[in-house]
Amino acid sequence: MMPWVRLPTRWITSKGLLEFQWRGEGGGSNNVAALMCLIAIAHVASQQTGTAQITYNALGDVTGLSREKLSGGLRILEGGALVERKADGRSHYKLSNFDPALGWGKLPVKSMYRSGRIVAFDEFKLRQRSELDALKMFLLFIAFRDDGLNAANLSYTGIEKYSGIERSKIKAGISVLVNQHLVYIDQVQRAEETGVRHTYRIVGIDPYRHMGTSGRKET
Image 1 (spheres, rainbow, N blue to C red):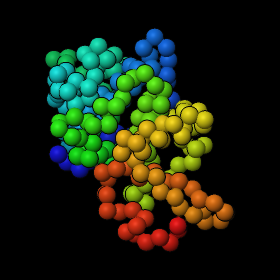
Image 2: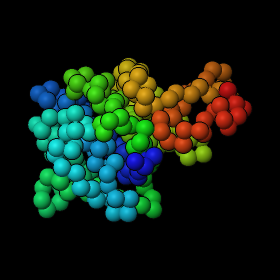
Image 3: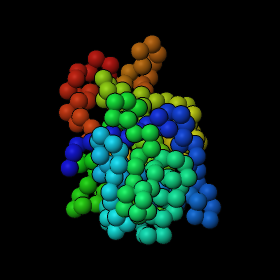
Image 4: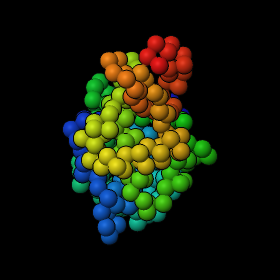
């Protein structure tokens, strides 16, 4: 497995995550399933073309999703023009707006798997809003990750603006990411004011570049 793959992020920086809301009658759980499917498809996509070949059975194996939830999630991805389904309908996909030169962020691969499954998804039951919020913030941090800092520097205001997550619910979503070993939180001293700010580092992306190895000038 590669350490990371390219994930198109222009839709995220254009506030596309606002479309993924927690709604009744299965809408919330299908949105969780959609983002889980997006991650799994991106993991196996060609890094030149963005095309991916993965069967329903394989998608179910790596995500833990039922066929019903796979179908619901994939419909959302297609309807939102994030994934195009190719001719055979069920095993060939293409990440929309994939450009290997720009407009992408580093999505971790190797660190997310154990025994052929995305291990964090083992704990996702598709019954809690915090799971959807966690996945939205995970993708948001990937899109806004600063390569020099090796972290995303986003305030709660920024998170709310680009994800649509209510401020009061952000902490619960971040707790899911930390507990599932998807994100580290670093504290950095504010330059011109008292207190600290948080930056969000993606587990598995340049793991040896962090505050402990690059010096602690700001801490």
